[in-house]
Length: 168
Image (tube, rainbow, N blue to C red; front, side, top):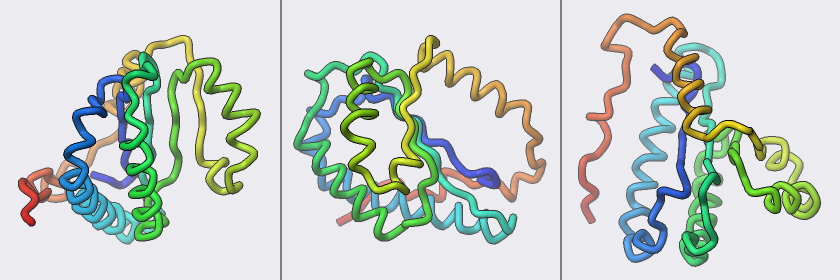
């Protein structure tokens, strides 16, 4: 169930960004459908629990090299994120960049964070750990596994309700 929100985990070093650029039209459609699907389920959990339920994003920067980045895709993705933020302003809660390079930590603190709106800066975190991201993720999954689970299958959200194919 989505009663406590949802954590989206992205391993940036495993994304093949250069292969995604030609598929941006399909990505835009998939993002539109997935954001609506996510919003509907988080909104339902918010209404049921009477507590605001949101999305938390964890982005692993560990192992990401500059040559892996596609700046056109990054700009395009940022524009789409802005559009989605306008459509679903209450959806995202926190964003964590895990294990960024030291230069990124410095640039964030000295250059980027002061220029961002206060609300965005307060919800964006750079986390430098001595653990690998996979170890952190394993610890998170282990702690979540010990949380009480709801027994009724009917209350679980099925990925089967997600559209299998995007048609034009």
